[in-house]
Image: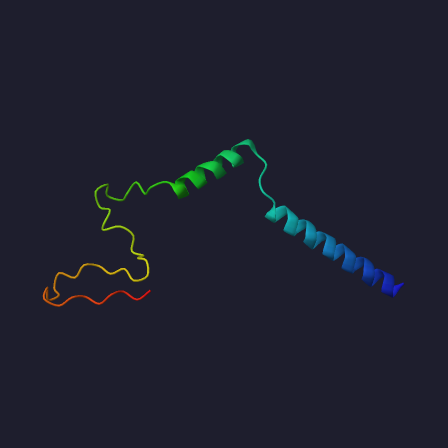
Length: 85
């Protein structure tokens, strides 16, 4: 009987832990939960309202390979090297 009791305790413990994990990880099913999810995604996709409107900088910080910014401190008599492919 000792082995059967141990088996029942182990099964009972695993059922309780499985139900607790399921209860904490499930998505809410209320009416407002879907609206809140949609609003959160729209805020993530929208612009930052605190950012200045005219402060857009020079564009993206990422440049394609071989692209360089114009260097106005370079000597105009020297021709720049061709970018490598």
